[in-house]
Amino acid sequence: MQLPRFTVIFLILPWMAFCQQTPKSPAMNEQKFPIEKEEGEWKQILDSDQYRVLRQKGTEAPHTSRYNMHFEDGIYHCVGCNAPLFAGENKFDAHCGWPSFDQPVSDTAVVEIPDNSHGMRRTEVVCGNCGGHLGHVFPDGPRETTGMRYCINGVILDFK
Ligand SMILES: [Zn+2]
Image (cartoon, rainbow, N blue to C red; front, side):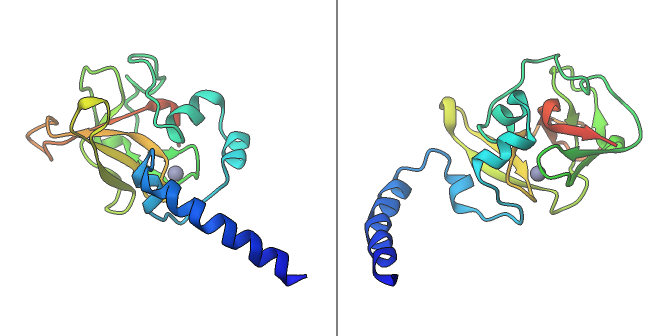
């Protein structure tokens, strides 16, 4: 019964190649991350707001996150995969309405990807472990430290 399976692969391969020529989110399609799940699995783990941000690159409304004005010692983890992303000591009040950090908790915690969507040149920040969308990084952070502002959706953070 090997023959039908090969037939299916031959039918699917050209279709996959075609789809990859017009990727909607090239970063997620091209880059491999340690944690990979089917969309159905993500929907079981995440609530609808978390799914919209983490898996569909959504943005939470400003000033709505419970972590926006939250300044405690601890680590903010990814709600999708539990990886540590940002430390409380690197959080600052950027007056922008979203939790903001001047650097990630480690060099590998996040991955930065050029994002030219919505007519803007921005740098997207995704989880280094699961590839989930976290927010964007801008070069207008505190000059006395890194000068960078990691503007992160609080809905996908879990503080511990
Ligand atoms: Zn993650």
